[in-house]
Length: 126
Image 1 (cartoon, one colour):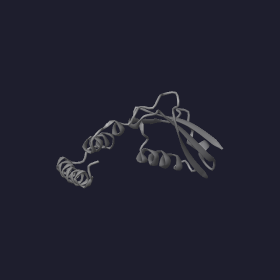
Image 2: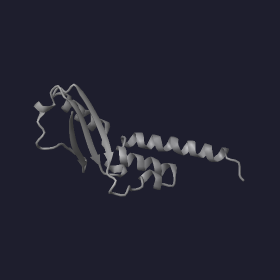
Image 3: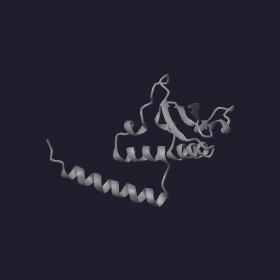
Image 4: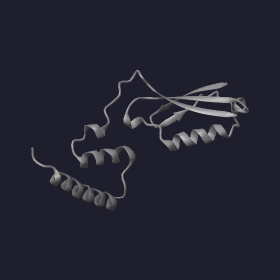
């Protein structure tokens, strides 16, 4: 069994410099990726798939990837949890995942306003 420790910092995945792909051939490989806490420090599915493809090219028999959160750093609250309105939550989500095209943003915000108005209109006063 070969265990590889990797770090994910500043949006970049760092594997050990002395990693020898030849040592991975026909081995059981476990990769432990340390990721700092926080919503803006997420290791995307695409980055995980790129790592997996890179390591599978070396020919291991088995490959496991484990993501570990850095426990030394206190987690930051997600921007979505800090937003107070539905529009604020949507904008926070876009801030984390990327903005859609401007015309689509306007359509989504208009639809959200209609939904919100409908929900508020259906709530009976207490």
